[in-house]
Image (tube, rainbow, N blue to C red):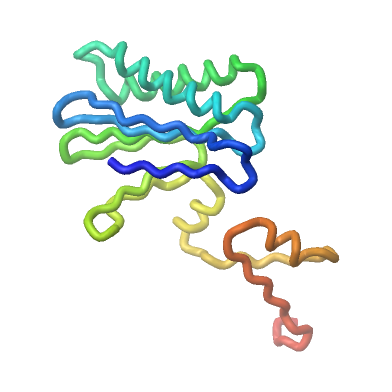
Length: 174
C-alpha cells in the first residue's frame, strides 16, 4: 500500500488522515478522510473520522458483518464530528479488501483509485461531486456566459485547466 497526501495550495496545513487496518490474513480496510476546505477544524474532523472507524473495527465481534461495522462507523463519525459544534466537516472514503473482492464506501467528494502494474487503472470510485457526475454521464464540455470585467483573472484563479473561448458575433448560432 502506497499513500500520498499533500496540503492544498490554499490550506495552511494538510487536512488528510489515512489508515490501513488489518482485519485478517486476507482482509483489510483502507481509509482516507479529508477535512472539507473552508470548514473550520477540518484536520481534527478528518482525524476523528479515521479514529472512529479504527475504534469501531477494533470493537467488532467475530460474527459481526464487516459491512455493518463500517456503516456504523460512518454514522458514529458523523455524530462525533457534528458534536464538535464548530462547523467542522470531513469526507470519508473506505475500501474493504476481502480476498479478491473490493467494496467501497464514501461520503463526500474524495475517492479511491486503485492501479496495478504500470499504473494501469483497476478500480475508481465515483467521487460525489458535480464534476464527477458530469464525467460519468459523458459530457466533458461546459458552456456558460461570463460577464465580468476581470473574468480571465477569476477563472484562472480557480485552478486546473480552463480555456476561455470567445465566440465571434458573426457565427451562425443566431
